[in-house]
Length: 342
Image 1 (spheres, rainbow, N blue to C red):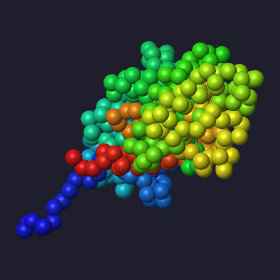
Image 2: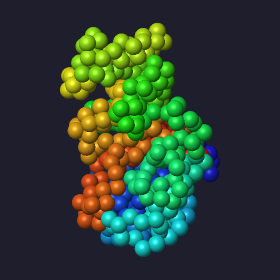
Image 3: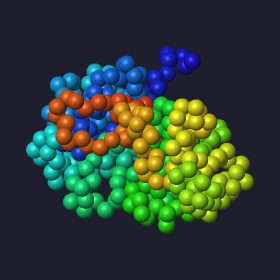
């Protein structure tokens, strides 16, 4: 120890949480997450958005901050909020164009702070895609926006949904069901699986991830009697992954791979299409589901639900998924040593 006394290290970097649409439940669940910070041992975080959106729906302490460093010191006493441009008149449950602009500015600022290393991870609050599209937002969602800002092609990232007992990856995401067969290729499955393996190791500390693949058709095609996609596409992809040393099983019948005993045999399930992945995840962990983007140089998570305008401002919003998203982001950032002081 130096003769002058103990060294004073700066506090760990906080997490940036974009507020999402100010008329949705994002402000409320962020505030409730802060109120539960001690119960859940949450890493310090700060909200990015219009502080008035929080004050409309919550009567707890709020402090406006200018820098992430201020967030760490203020976090114990009040919810730190880094304010962006005025969102206009904020009415919970009534989204508008000004609110959409505020949501986008909040996302851009939180993203920039995380990229710059001022925040150790990014958690994105729920947005209204239709409102964002009305102001010229041309991305399918926040995931694609974050990927592009990180310089990563969306094809090289993975949307993983995670809860306490299940992690799922939809190989195809927001596309019509009729388009899935044409999009499901050997190369796509292999690419998504490789990103998933790296993500499970980097973010969850799983040294040798186990992957299970769902079939596209009922009974995984029943040996070709109910469809040949398993034989033509999924099985060849699994063979390539096994040759690379990846622990991969399947294709499995989707209706029998999500019960408790089956879930114990793998670390992530790769599913052919959106609902095949999200229905079991949301059935098991509706209030705890987290969306994590794998394949990025930063850590990004989001609660796996929408803006819920119908209950905004009623104090009915459950903060469980936001709390889980903050905890998962903090744990992943710690494993990747992103939360350490500069």
